[in-house]
Image (cartoon, rainbow, N blue to C red; front, side, top):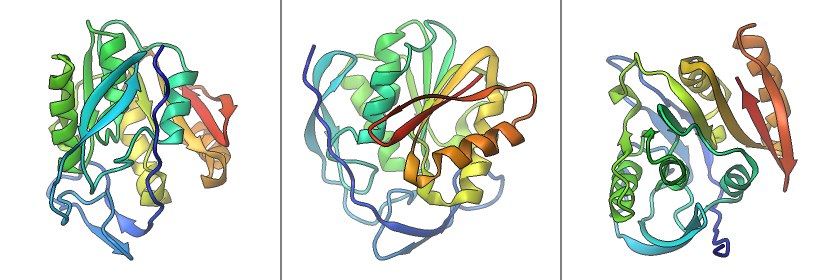
Length: 231
């Protein structure tokens, strides 16, 4: 097995954003301090550089850039998720909510080559990196796109996400209620959330708002993160 390679992105403060498809409405972002990775079009120039990481037991060299989430490696929450949950469904549709440069989507695609992986993000630079990184790995089963561009009739056997908690509670709730009800019958969603950023309250909120057709539970705790399971 290859060694773990990771890096954490600096914390920035967000006042308000929109994350998810709303017909006829633009993506709106107000940032206090500096540009945030939730921007649809980052203002900083895209300067790509190589990134060495371990994905699905392989040491790989991919591309990264500034203006996206965790550009310097796999953040701790995503590491906890990738190392702490069962493999995704072998076939069908798989979803990564908030793909960044692609660590979750690429791992899903490597583990389930017969499945179709959908990677969504509002940051178009992230989408371009995910597409190109998938091509670098020879993964033809990854489709990276804006949320609006995903067929609304699709249902997903597996959803993996390190959700963008800092977009704000209302936007986060809207985001999760947009995607989680699109689980296929028998499908499972796995979310990683830091404890001090409200993982326990989010678990309660999901249980109250997804309805009786869904079970929401705490699957595990590691390194100050909770993994939540929805099925």
